[in-house]
Each structure stands twice: as C-alpha cells, then as structure tokens.
Length: 209
Image (cartoon, rainbow, N blue to C red):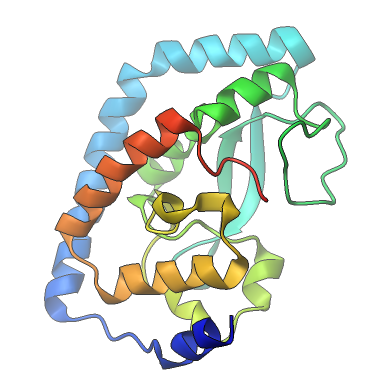
C-alpha cells in the first residue's frame, strides 16, 4: 500500500492538446449514443420501473448528489435497488445485503440499475467511460493529486471497473482513474467498453469485499 501511495504522489497530469481534442470528440459521441440507446431501451426502462413499483412502490429512481467535472455537484440517477426507507448511512453494499430488494438484486447483478445514467450523459454530467463519480464527502477527503480524477467527466464504467470494480481498495480505484486520464485516448475507451461487456455478464465486483 505504501508503494501505491508513493505512485499516487508522483502522478501529476497535464492533458495534451491532442488528448483534449479527443475528449471533445468523445463527449459529442457520448450524447449521440446516449440518446439512441435511451430510445432503444425505453421498453426496458418501463419494465424495470413496473417491477420496482410492484414490489416496493415508488420512487422508481434513486437520485443522489455526486461530484463531476472540475468538482461540480450534479444529481446522478439510478434505478432504486434499495427497499423503501432503508438505512443508507452505510454507503457500502454487500452480497445478501438485507436492504436490497429482490428486483434490486437482479438489476445490480447485471448493472441494469446504472441505465438511468444515460440521462446524465444526455445532460452532459457524465460520460460512458471515466472515473466513477464520488459522493461530496468523499471528494472532500481527496488531496490535490487525487482530485486530478476530475479533469474529465465521470463515467458509467472505467479502468477501475474492469480491474476489480468494488473489490478494489479506495487508493487502488483512484490510482486506476489517474492512470486512465494520464494515458487517455479513444482506443483506450474502446478497450474499456470491450472489457466492460464481460465484467457485466460475469457480475464480477458488484459488491464490496
């Protein structure tokens, strides 16, 4: 862990003009594909919404403050997987967590609960690929080097997600996020999308250790 902390200290990032150009292309493509996917997946949205309502009533969505590009706060959307009135003071979830509903277990298993974040991408808050957005209190604990993960928009999936996801320790997640930004290019995004498909199918790393 000490070696990892030393690596984090040395990870100073300066995005090149070419990387910034690629990011602008990426964000444009994000919106186009998010709109198309949202339209195509509307039947799935309706079915999942109905299942949540039938099991546990309203609301359908779980809305939470998260930190985005340059430290800006935004509302992130997910399908609600927790039971109504569940105690959410513990932000970590585990397999067989009693707070999670039956429908919630299913949609978490296949990451279907993340689909409403297509709306965040359309709004410009998020990207398909990037560091997962932190909660505001987590952001406050980061130092200047770690806050470099906000040089790009947060994503639905990212380098940390294909390298262990929620099984990673906090410092490991940040390390992968910074490595992603430092070495950013569109080909890396395509590789992460490819790997994400198999991670979602396997259900690997859905819950914390």
